[in-house]
Length: 272
Image (cartoon, rainbow, N blue to C red; front, side, top):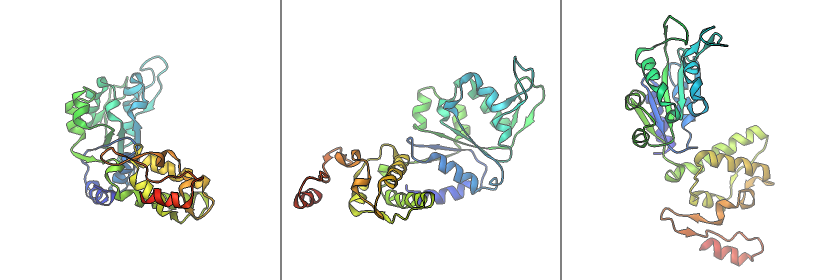
């Protein structure tokens, strides 16, 4: 599945309030998909709140999600939790499989009952949020490892979106490169026209273990080095073309970029 077909899926999903689980390798753009779902929905004018679950210490999870009232414990003040902050909008829970297992039952109750209670409070607060979550592993592996409660998984994954790694959607590589080139042209006030044919060939043969994030960073780095209006081999990191692997795992020296070699040797290497 490429981003073109995924865009159509996002448009359809955005029309509902169903929970969405997005999964795929790190750097594939899961956060962009979550934002797209929100900004194509009827909730677009309300908050989009993003929280990386791996970034919250387990001792602060409950207060982060539900808030606190003053005096609930020593030093506690009145604070608003994520469920309240996202009222009427979308709450995006990234790396949901990193959430402490102890809080997951409370999150499930909040989602199912659409009611939360601040720590130390006696009254319930109604919630109105759409939950979009993401993980960088396959759901079945996460459940098998005991990282995610099965009942919470079923609640979060009414709709599932698998984001394939960039190496499995080669057709997106040049499209995304063009997008990032336009983006950095605007941001840096430059006028790069595109990639050289050799660079395109290198990009299409590289595995992109860091996925879209890595491609973005490579393009940004090239903007810092590029002296002409085309991104050439000398503008990209040499680790990308030193040793590339095809889908069978066979190592191919796509081209010898040793600038001390003759033109004929370069041509021979390229043709090989």
